[in-house]
Image 1 (cartoon, rainbow, N blue to C red):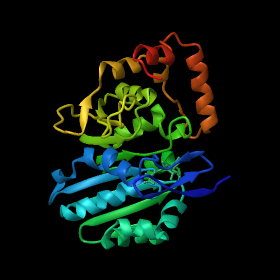
Image 2: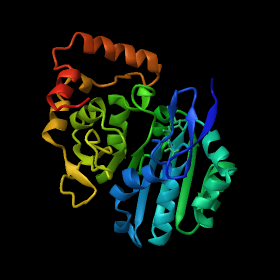
Image 3: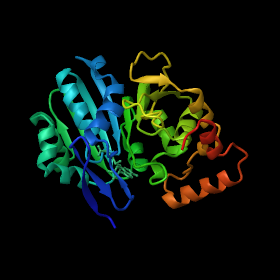
Length: 291
Ligand SMILES: C[S@@+](CC[C@H](N)C(=O)[O-])C[C@H]1O[C@@H](n2cnc3c(N)ncnc32)[C@H](O)[C@@H]1O
């Protein structure tokens, strides 16, 4: 029930499938490919050359997003203050015993990942990293009050499989931890997630897909309070995406106690959708000629 099965994605990088969540950790197109295109490129890390940066990686998993972040920030001689939140120690531990995974990264990155795996932390002159194992909904409240983030990566399983980390209440905690000019980056284009972020006051941008195919309209969402963005990897939401935020799909996931089970969160939302007068998602799809 709680097994992780190795998956080799199309770019050759390894990933896992979680039996518990009944979902892969990455898109089959490529774990490394996804990290680079959906998280690292839109982060524009060159901005932090010789500067300090605070990063929060939620649902750290195997650690692809942060491994590529570390690799880039080492090159930029940045000073990094990093926190990773993750429920399960095994994905990183299993990946570190895999030859292909080790071959993907420079030795310095492997040294950091090994230290996070064995000690839960890594500290040197420029990097101060803590991997916190536990439910992100609780652990986010234990982060130092004075630390606000330049970047937050949100990379949980999809909202239908793991609604607890996409709830309005959890997203509002991210609002409290992000800097005004900070970027919250996720692969999700879910209307419920976007609408919650919008209602929390974030400006929303589409992460432009690298592969252009008819139904591939988004590679995710970048949310920020600073709407003056000069970032080639993002675009304003299209009319189609804005309309998506007025359909039943936009009804948020709610978790007021921060302790609800995923099935309870899903059931409350299903009932709210049932009685809602908003446009059905199928009508929206039909209008925009989506399968
Ligand atoms: C899609 S995978 C993460 C992919 C990841 N960024 C990587 O590079 O491998 C989702 C991760 O979220 C973790 N997770 C699920 N629920 C969580 C929770 N409530 N708090 C923290 N982590 C959670 C899972 O254990 C899993 O490792």
